[in-house]
Length: 379
Image 1 (tube, rainbow, N blue to C red):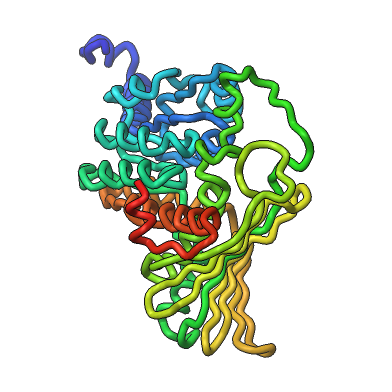
Image 2 (spheres, rainbow, N blue to C red):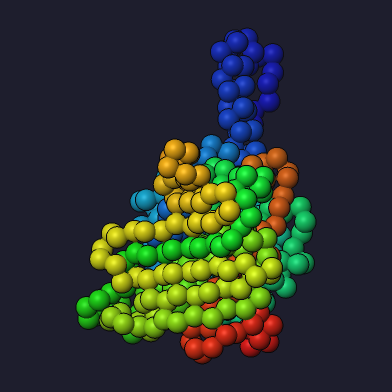
């Protein structure tokens, strides 16, 4: 920058000083922003990445994906992404000292590897759910989380825990106003399974990675990739993980991939509390019936991503509609933690909810009751 001299002051007058002050303020604002790197620019990475950059406290510094078409989509769909540095190797992105925080939105089976690398790089981390596709992967993530720098904020994409509506439900439960909790339940009933033959447009070496959500090895099956949201709420409400699970399910009509397409699981929580998960992907396109419920001696609490309702009789029903996508709340709270230097670490609860989903999968696959300890010893 040119030094300010008596000559420049006389030539430019106060306008020069005002212009330089404005430029300095803008630079200071940019330098104070949380610089974000996105690892994985598929559909979820682009959507959540957009929520991040819509926060004025965040600046997008880099994007990373192994597929050029995903990079191109990110550049056109995520605001300011066309000016971000582009990487194909996530290790190079993490090595950048410019990047403060990372969004990990890669296929589920890669979450343990990428999370571990982000911990080693000492970044703030927002990782999409779940914590892994198998027990061994989740254990790897737990080990990394336990050695993470306590000054770094670590969050996972279990958005309900940050939703005003879910928090209102939790307040009712913790207050005791709903009475004794007798049963908890999660329904994830929607479409999604391909019901007719499908030929991938991608070459064979890319096919399963591109369509990772249809394959158990890469997604953990849909009970892990999808239903972990509901399972996380059950654990949150019960304040514990289940001791055992039994269930049934299978594959009735799915025409692509090797995942199941329907299941029902009974989780046994401490104190004899039953938790039920019912899920399918056999619904027609755009069908959506997703909710969590608590049945108590004094009422029934129902929460969805659209509303919160507390039923205490026909003449006593409280209902509040959701204001926005709960992911926006989750992203904001994560950024708050980074900016305000009030870090948290959600990795262990995220891992526990993922393991609960894996417990349910093992119970369905084996056709028998499986305990938590048996599941943990399986890998």
